[in-house]
Amino acid sequence: MLTKQELEEFSAEANLLYLDHISIDCVVFGFHEGQMKVLMLKSKNEAGWQLPGGFVKKEEPIDVAATRILATRTGIDEIFLKQFHVFGDADRNRQHNEMYNKVVAPEKNFFSHRFISIGYYALVDFIDVNPTPDAFSELCTWRDLDDLPPFLLDHEQIFKTALDTLRLQLNYQPIGYNLMPKEFTMPELQKLYETILGTKLDRRNFQRRMLGFGILNKLEATRKGGAHKAPYLYSFDLDNYQAALKEGLKSGW
Amino acid sequence: MLTKQELEEFSAEANLLYLDHISIDCVVFGFHEGQMKVLMLKSKNEAGWQLPGGFVKKEEPIDVAATRILATRTGIDEIFLKQFHVFGDADRNRQHNEMYNKVVAPEKNFFSHRFISIGYYALVDFIDVNPTPDAFSELCTWRDLDDLPPFLLDHEQIFKTALDTLRLQLNYQPIGYNLMPKEFTMPELQKLYETILGTKLDRRNFQRRMLGFGILNKLEATRKGGAHKAPYLYSFDLDNYQAALKEGLKSGW
Image (tube, rainbow over all chains, first blue to last red; front, side):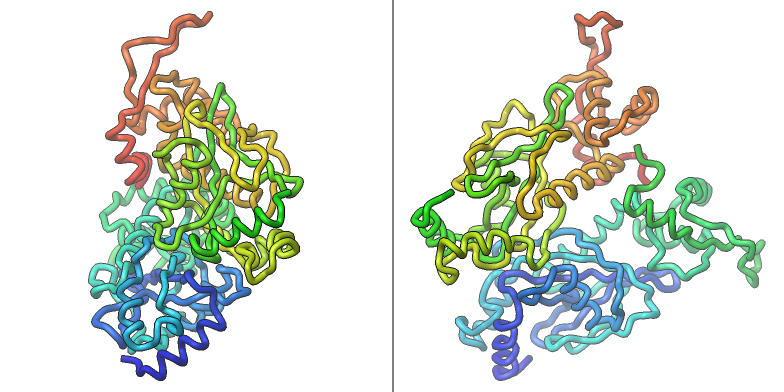
């Protein structure tokens, strides 16, 4: 647990720096060896884990705040971040209001009131990230998507909403540029989709549909070294990929 | 322009009732006789129009606040509302900060600080709505999507983001239940899609794709009275429609 002095110092600074009532929480997805992972922090103060998060400076655009918060937790300055939902139940952080009000006088306590939290998700290259805990955490680390620890507050709902959003977006937006290595095989890309969707996909349908989107370049080289016929390598066609991010995939209306 | 006294009274009440720094703005789409319309308010204080909006009470969930705000502007208590984006540039409402700070002392003025605005869109049956202005507006009325008046603040960006969101969502979610009459012809439904997308669609592709989603019931009756062969009537299959809203349309992965 943080000491009374540490909490008072944090609150005094936060009251000066940040907007009240508004927080940011981030669901950071990383992909590594066929496994989807989520970046999480183990609390110093309670038995449970949180998503990386923080607050908005008084004159800071919210997207800049989200980027700053994630840079501090991951060491990556330019991260692909997307707002996906705002969590605004009246008592979503009551557990923390009460816990911190016992330590810091409520009129000084930055956590004494309600916070509406803006959810962002990020897709990152797993190997680029240097997980770094914040002042309230003893550990910041990757956790497997299918073996997540107990969440604090409404962070499980925030995580699930991010995953549902990602699953729906597979139907109309490209994905993978920030998660896959520069060159990859079709089975490797299919594994990413299967991991996000939590289900097996048909190999031929996947390949036909994916090629139909026109966002892949088939490379001359093949992946050598396996027992099977060497599979073709692909890379993303960045121009078409960016256009599809903006306008939706070609299968649209 | 509101008087100094009116503004001071509004501010005094708002400071007691509402969270600071957080507002809600709504893009209300209605469909009537093949024309998409947007609900807008003409300001009393400036030359320009705004979207319906308001604030969040100190102990009110944000979705409840959005529903309350729209009920006040439309007379409809249960409205299909969907959060789509948060607008959080640092100076998005500076124009109003400065205007109202000239009238009400900044330390008393509810509008003296920055507001982060949560955007909701609504799809409503045009004929159910009773447009009602708020204290800052002289008029609340429907405007045609292709002939919108000049917007105040960042409301044009809010409107455009809502329309872009709706267009993207046509690719993976059903639409129309809240916009169409109970029974409709395929050309009438196609007209709705064309209006949202701002483009013509191929009649046969539209019908094939729409029927493939499995969200329509073909009725026994036909639409009588036209010069052409009487077209079939359809209604939405609500169970399948709701499932597709949640899980995405069948054309998905």
